[in-house]
Length: 281
Ligand code: AMP
Image (cartoon, rainbow, N blue to C red; front, side, top):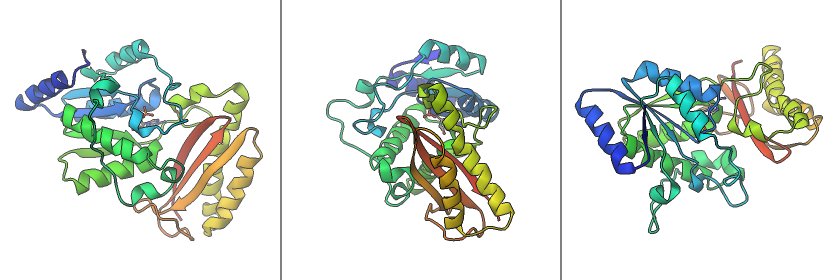
């Protein structure tokens, strides 16, 4: 497995693979790998001849006061897991190289960032779209795999790739959960024992909503109210948003008609967790 720190070296390696007729599959991450990341790597292994993983905690997608400096790291462990999963190369740039002193170019979308996480994190998706564009130009993949756990991020990237005519297939990977239902996340490492128990309310809310829809409830406000109570009954929780929306435009929907995204963000202690599910009437 190649470990590459330099942008130019990564570009040269990918160019050579492309000239050799290989298909490059790419999984971008911020590291501290878990089974969610592994499932994306498995998908990539099946879809490409050359599988590239990037690990980069991207400063431009964190706002001041967020957890950039505290973000969990375990590079040695991550490299071991990557090797086991059959990764061919890991791209590990540093921030000074990605954003030089005179850096001034950003990619931002007009509409999708105005919903869900974009409301409490107004600069987040600009950072995501920018770093993903840069990583695409460096890794030169044919196909890139992103998790549905970050549903809005996946929507933003699909839209950006379409709008900017990037010749890259974007594949979504299903949410991987712990045995008790908590969506895997590097940030789960921040949770105390009590908070870890409270955090289950996100998954319970999704299940509860699915049950209501199955029983014929179709007013989204009724479902939201009822899940709000589940979350607020748990210690140390603070709701950022509970939204029922169109899975493509992310505009909120008053009624469940056709597939509807139920997305939620909840702070448990100081840790902001997100989860989502598509509800079908
Ligand atoms: P991150 O390292 O958190 O930036 O995530 C890197 C990629 O892994 C993103 O495409 C995430 O959506 C995806 N991912 C994170 N958690 C999960 C999960 N529990 N299941 C599936 N994909 C995930």
